[in-house]
Length: 414
Image (cartoon, rainbow, N blue to C red; front, side, top):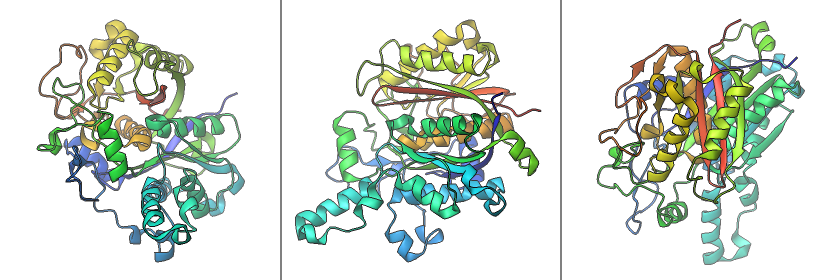
């Protein structure tokens, strides 16, 4: 018999909150975390806005030596994991550490360290390149450092599937527990890519919004005037446990993960399939695995990044999936407030879905001002939070490379 998997801890480092309570309050109040970039001089960039975690203080989480040896993306992940573990109340001193592990997704990894050391190479030569460069930049530094932090010794790896990374990490953690390999997993995503090189590359792909004069209005999923996503950073981490393990220690249970499905577009390395076939397949199969029908889904946290093509394709795939039920469905994009955290997005959005189930409250899609005739027919929860009874919800994540994943969560019940 397959084991049931529940969510017992939430940890978030985001542009609109560095704790689940602050994040949730900001989401429900429609607060945008997008503003002018402060991390570097953007005067030569066409895009000068992003979702920065501006008040993150590494010294709160690490001593001077640790801080120097961790790239920002790993700092975010460790901090979010500490918050999630504290929230879960789990005591690893009373847990079999060989039955606890961590899987963390990231789209790009330690790009800050790469850029910094490349400058040193060019200006001072190879003898001055840091010996800590490789351990800082490698994508698996995040799960490795989390495992060291908590001395947990089971499954440990990093997943890199662009913007689907965080969701893929949670899915693999779920699979590990469900099939009996582990009892506890720390999983999610992390990213820190607000750098000159990354922003230059994304802007030249024509992927980013250029609404520099109105940063808080720039991320506008489903809206007719959307012109690209807004790059963001942070980390969303959850603690997953086998149900009986969680019940035995009287853990608070936010939600149950019922199932997921992955698919691939096999179409283009950086564009979704025009008919949304991969997205549709992931959603359809996630329902089948979860043993639900489409009428049981109350809400979908859409991938919807605010790109002209991507949002329309996802909307059409959702309508194709839900048929006549589409009129009863609520669909919002919390990226309208958070921006696009890339590899961290799926972790943060799964966390948000757990809070939605617990509170029967759906955060809005802000900046939805001009309906798009090519992207319509759903309740996008425009601009204001909505109270709605939710039993089952879905979270979508789609990434460059053609990756698609849908995760289904349900209210916990015995």
